[in-house]
Length: 123
Image 1 (cartoon, helix red, strand yellow):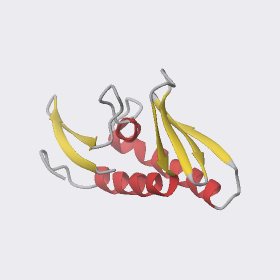
Image 2 (cartoon, rainbow, N blue to C red):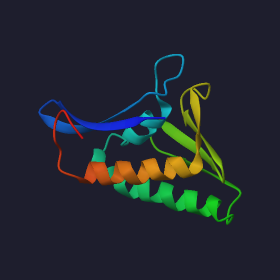
Image 3 (tube, one colour):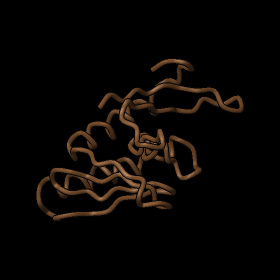
């Protein structure tokens, strides 16, 4: 799966964006939707939520927990040691399976990206 991060200008404000070559039948990337779900609070407010997701992944990776859920406003994840299910909280038929380690790497990359200097039109 190839995932790209970029900045877009929306209503005069820079906003982080995600795109993926892994789309479902409706042209949606659940992993990008999960990453961009800021709960309506702005992208910087999502940093503690991302940190919590990384902590929860660590808890299943080290077998402290067998499985754990993690969600925000509209998107969630069922986290298991090897695989995770990214899904819409409004329609559980909209989902994507992803390697849990890959999800953790994407969360860390997204966190670094949104904390960086916005450059509209590029990463």
